[in-house]
Length: 50
Image 1: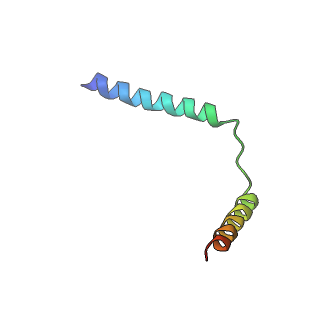
Image 2: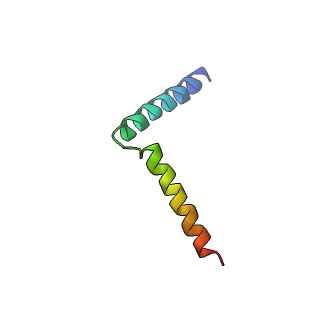
Image 3: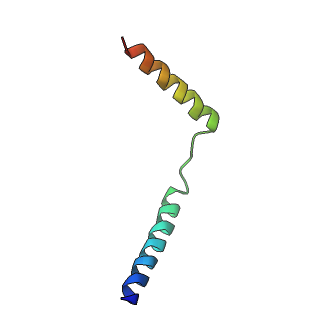
């Protein structure tokens, strides 16, 4: 039973490390750009509603 718990814990740790390595090269938009995108999205939604 202990081995199963250890296997699950190591699997989660290894999975998280792989996820971080995979996403390390991705770029996130700046806060300013995200804010502008949200404003633009809200404007489009309000224009589409009658």
